[in-house]
Amino acid sequence: MEQTELERAIEAILFAAGERVEISRLAMALETDENEIIRAADTLADRLSFERRGIRILKLDRGYQMVSSGEMADFVTRALETRKPPKLSSSQLEALTIIAYYQPATKAMVEQIRGVDSSYSISALLNKKLIEEAGRLNVPGRPIQYKTTPDFLRTFGLSTLEELPAIEKVDFGEPLPEEQQASEEG
Image 1 (spheres, rainbow, N blue to C red):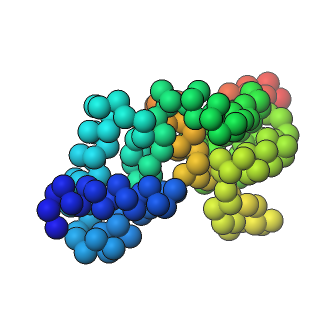
Image 2 (cartoon, rainbow, N blue to C red):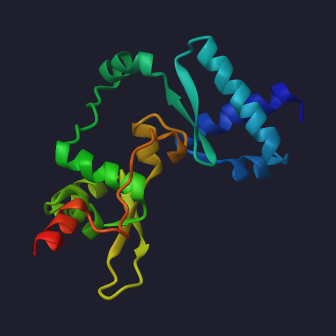
């Protein structure tokens, strides 16, 4: 399939889908290899962005999605009378940050880092579809593990988790500074 025709086909599929479509699924439907899909979709995304069109193609993990341009958000909102996504409280943002960087993460891990109960925050993040269950940890009690979702990537304008800014992570193999000091004093 010619490059221009491939771009047009990808554009039509993404428009009709209204959600993220896996690269492998596009390759299968268009009977071409994944590298050709990536090249054509990236070229299309670059052209839409360069021309400052009202739509964009986002690469999300191993797929693509057609979305409206951020520059047009006010017009889209007014026209469709949709409400803005709910804001995250500071406790929800803290919990989400911990899950994003340490995933898969348990509620106990989030609470250990934050130092407070995080049940409400995790429940709210699940309801907002920013995190999802990622199985259970194989330890007594089998706690639920959580990971971020494609909605998390979309909400924060990321293609992959590797785009998160670097942070200094807590090493759970070593005692936290407070624990170290308490054991030295006691």
